[in-house]
Image: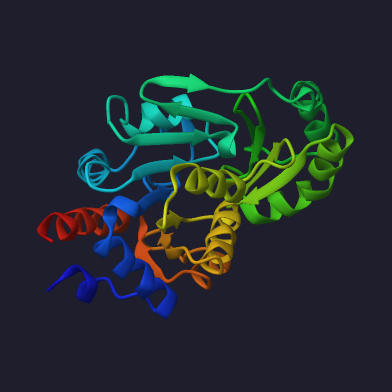
Amino acid sequence: MGFDEKWVPVTEAGRDGVRGILAAPGDAVVALDFDGTLAPIVSDPSRARAHPGVRGALEALAARVKAVVVVTGRPAALAVEYGGLAGLPGVVVLGHYGAERWEAGELSAPDVHPGVAAVREALPGVLASVGAPEGTWVEDKGRSLAVHTRRTEVPQEALESLRGPVAGLAAEHGLVVEPGRLVFELRPPGVDKGAALTGFLREVGARVVLYAGDDLGDIAAFAAVEKLRGEGLAGLLVCSGAVGDEPVRELADRADLVVPGPAGVVELLTDLGGAIRAR
């Protein structure tokens, strides 16, 4: 069974994306989220590690496509470390939704938005004042802060109870709130995966792209690919759905192809690399 028979997108646009990658891999970019896509979701983000097949799959693809790029809300250096990406030629990491860039072992980044420091100082008091439930915790990403409720007794209820206070604090200091699965991230405005992906694709002159993601933060990247399709770019949108769990519906409904979590993403990428090599 060939690649294009095994992995059949549900949309004609997605099938065009597959055909475009296979016909002209040198014009293609493979773009990937990290958490939930290359690495399983875990309760403690510091323990996240890429699926063991990721490095081999990306190494094979990077040798045959225009570029492989990881687009993540994590700091770029952490994505490199947790993904085992150091030393992989042809792989670029856009961290903090594109505010940071890691390439060929070098990291570049602008100054941190001043609102981040203000929110870092004020956030613990705000959470305490509204009675954030036990298990609520703050992840400091350096250029943004994330409020997680996954460890609370009733995670979704806890998240909703914090929505207003968190949004108010972010607005007060010029930040925006990006929702995700049992998390709110407070970060600078104008920075998202859609803008990061669009800029990268235009920079390298890509004519086709595969983008894979799993959460609400990836909707901006999906929207960017949909817009670029209207400008003549071919694209394949992949939703990584956690095994034993429902995928994020907003993403799955817009995807050309839904695969079973990071293991499914690795299988897809491995098969894609093999299909390109065989042609």
